[in-house]
Image 1 (cartoon, rainbow, N blue to C red):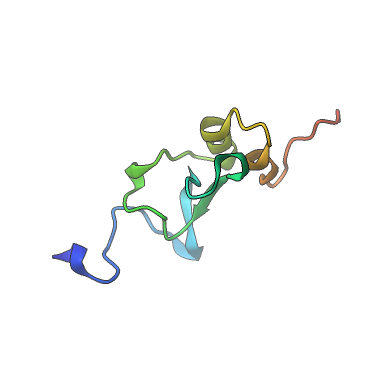
Image 2 (cartoon, rainbow, N blue to C red):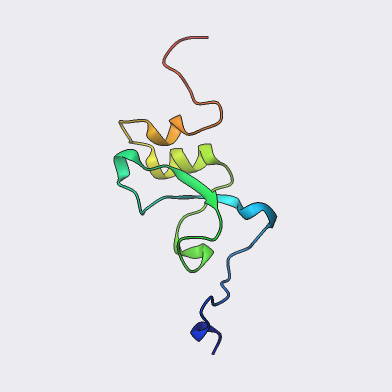
Length: 85
């Protein structure tokens, strides 16, 4: 019955501000240029439909660990650099 609504409820948690309290891989973008997101609404039905991670860094490491382009890591607030600090 509920699934027939124009915007059916999901089992995904919702928080204010349009951001989830977890990060998920962006499978809708080509892998070499994809990253992780915490935007709501989720682009999938249920939280368990994709892996989810406690941080953006954990998501990049878990879902895009072999990404040669480094696109996911470059989207971090403080992305790693190749220059020593």
